Amino acid sequence: MKGYFISVLLAFSAGLLGALQGTINAQAGKVFGQFAMIIGVSLTQVFIASMILMREGWSAFAPVFSPWMIVAGALGVIMMFSISSSISSIGTLPVFVLVILGQIIASALIDHFGLFGTTRPLSLQKLGSIFVIMMGVFWLVKSS
Image 1 (tube, rainbow, N blue to C red):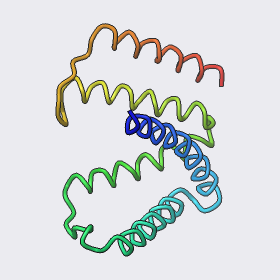
Image 2 (tube, rainbow, N blue to C red):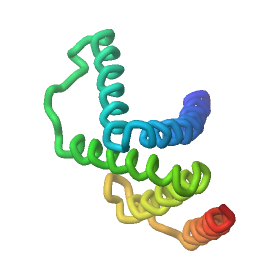
Image 3 (cartoon, one colour):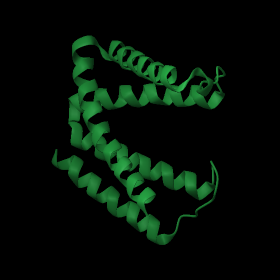
């Protein structure tokens, strides 16, 4: 139970930090340009990861880049650009509600088709829940 609680707390914290990071990235993108912001943020991540690797030992680093790492890195750049560009137009709350809706739909499809492991079919209850969330997102974005 303790591990479960910590996982829930970490996931919730990631959501809080993601909204903060997106807003900071949007401001930095306005000042320095979107691509300069992406490069600056990415270099900072590389620096911090390198410091952690130096502390933990370089044996944790595999100098091989898999195609999945390249895809994940490219998706990260696209996400960072999309979020920071959108926040200045429609605001932080609508952007992150839309991001979460996109994550819910993508996660449901990934689980349904078992794209990365165990298949968890979509049920009528799951589809109904997604529809209710979509309606909430629609009204929130419309009110913004």
